[in-house]
Image (cartoon, rainbow, N blue to C red; front, side):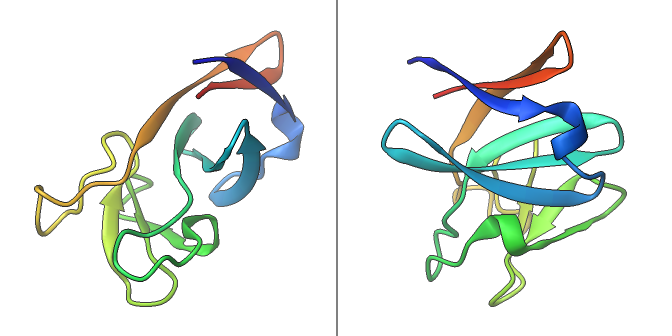
Length: 102
C-alpha cells in the first residue's frame, strides 16, 4: 500500500465524486457531510463509474449511475445485499491536502 496525494480539499466539491488513478487502481473519492470517502470506481454489477453516481440517504450512500445500485460510502457494502461489496480505501486530510492509501 502507498499514499497518493490527490489535491487540495477545495478540489473536492461537497456532494460529488471524482475519479483518480492511484497506482494501477481507479478510485472514486467523495466529499459529503464534511467527510471524505474512497472506494473502487467500478460498480460490481456492470462496471459503471461510481464517481458519476448520486449521493443519497443523507450522504451515506452512492447510487450507481447505470442501475441505481446503492453502496454504503463507509463500508462499500451493497445496501440490499451485504454480501456484495466494492473495495474501500483509507482517505484522509493532511494540512488541507487529500491523501488516499491504496
